[in-house]
Structure formats: C-alpha cells, structure tokens
Amino acid sequence: MRETNQRIMPEYLNRYSTRSFQKKMPSREELLDILEAARFAPSCFNEQPWRFVIGWRGGRLHDTIFANLTEKNQTWNRNTPILLVLIANQRFAHNGKDNFWANFDLGTAWGFLQVQAQQLGIATHAMGGFRKAQLHHDLSLSEEELPVAVVAMGYYGDLSDLSAEWKERDVPNSRRVVAELILAE
Ligand SMILES: Cc1cc2nc3c(=O)[nH]c(=O)nc-3n(C[C@H](O)[C@H](O)[C@H](O)COP(=O)(O)O)c2cc1C
Image 1 (tube, rainbow, N blue to C red):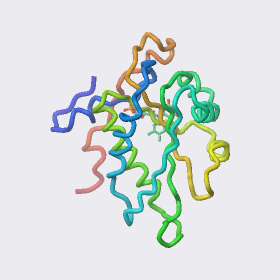
Image 2: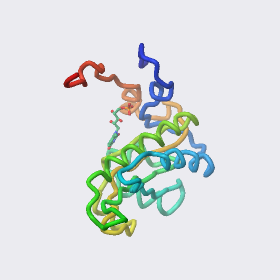
Image 3: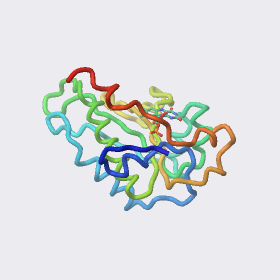
Image 4: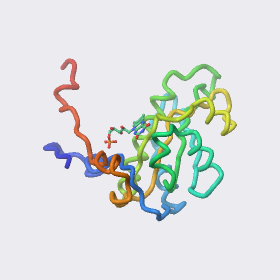
C-alpha cells in the first residue's frame, strides 16, 4: 500500500498501473469524460498538441494497436477493453515551426486524463513498448504526428486472471521521497 503524510487527492495515491482489467467495457461517455479532463491541460501557446486514436476491444483499431505492442506487452493486453494511442503533434499550427514542448504538453494531458480515469474507477497503464514507426504507418499518421505512448484502459480487474509472473508484480510500487527530488532550494 502507498502512504503519504501530505494532503493530496486520493486519486494520486490510489492510481497504479495494473495489468488486470475487467471484461466490462467503459462506456463511450466515460471515455469522453476522461478525454475532457485532458482537454483542459495547459500547453505552450495553448497549442493543445495532443491527439488520440481509440481502439475498442473487438474493433479494427484495437487489433492494429495490439499488433504493434512488444511481445511482452501483448501477453497482458489481448483483452484490454481500450487501447489508446497518445500522439503529439510536433509542429506548431500557428507558424509551422517545430514544437519543442509537444511531448511535454502531451504528458500533461496524459496526467490529467489518468487522474480523471482513476476518479471513475478506471485504470490506465502507459506503455512505451510498441513499434513506433510501424504504428505510425499503420494508423496513417502525418509526418508531424508522433505516437509517444499506448495506454491500456479499463476497470481494475481481478488479479487472479493474471499469469503468475504478472500477478506478483501487480502491486503499487514505491516512490522516492520528495527530499530526494529537490536539487536546490
Ligand atoms: C512512458 C511510460 C512507458 C511505460 N512503458 C511500459 C511498458 O512498455 N510496459 C509496461 O508493462 N509498463 C510500462 N510503463 C509502466 C511503468 O512501469 C509504471 O508506470 C511505473 O513503474 C510506475 O508504476 P505505477 O504506474 O503503477 O505507479 C510505462 C510507463 C510510462 C509512463
């Protein structure tokens, strides 16, 4: 169990990246609530460079995203209700220049959306383990649209559904203390 002596919202403390999801699909309305939270993230020049591709289990996009996960990530994602691709547009719309902060802003949007998901009882698990160039191609993304991460989403499931290897790893892990993170004050 994670613990804190500081006064933070429970969603921060209780969220963790499970690999076990219920079969039950989150509704489209719930997913729209989650993406709505991301919508209000701050971004450089209010550019909102985040874009999403949504794969619902049973659909073509889910198959495409799944096929591009690493083998290891595939072992626990076959029945994941939603596979969401997080994409950052690398170019500013207003002047066509490179947006150095695009991935930073996508990360903020991802932070907002995962906390909103947690508030709805929906788990999110980010993955960097996927074939970037192939997924970019298979989703017909434009040159400036970079798929940065894939996120597995669904209601927290029953750990007994996981293989022994994943079951023992499916616990909230620890964190550095804040004092370790402050380089100067
Ligand atoms: C950018 C990013 C990439 C990640 N890639 C993977 C991955 O490919 N496979 C996986 O099982 N977990 C992946 N994770 C999950 C992390 O291991 C996890 O978030 C971290 O250990 C902290 O645990 P917590 O999310 O449960 O708090 C990734 C997380 C992030 C944010």
